[in-house]
Amino acid sequence: MPVSGLGPYDDQNIFARILRGEVPCRKVFEDAHALAFHDIAAQAPVHVLVIPKGRYVSFADFSARASEGEIAGFFRAVGEVARQLGLETAGYRLLANMGPDSGQEVPHFHVHLFAGRKLGRMLVAE
Image (tube, rainbow, N blue to C red):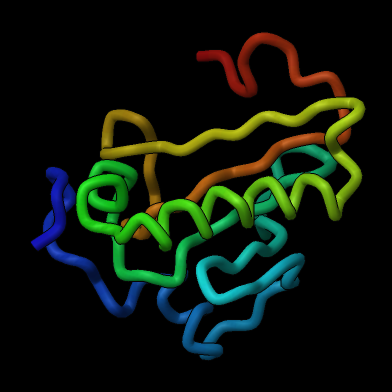
């Protein structure tokens, strides 16, 4: 059972379907631990999602249940995506939402990577 208030993993969520190849994506990177692809509703000139290949609903779930290899592999993949896209010099932002109050829309742990312009203190102000 996942560790979070989001309930059980839904195998029909959009990221699960992308991982199975049922829904296409504009792939940036893939290895044994992670898949990275361009967000279809980009909020910055560069907006890439990095998702683990395991069935984790949130960061809380991933950090509690993933193996050390999965955790290290996932975060190394995030760094590799930033390097491959040439983002390290100008900088980038990582964002992971966890739960309904944060705005998490897909119940599969993921990290947003934003870059390509000055992002300011916050990406979206309300």
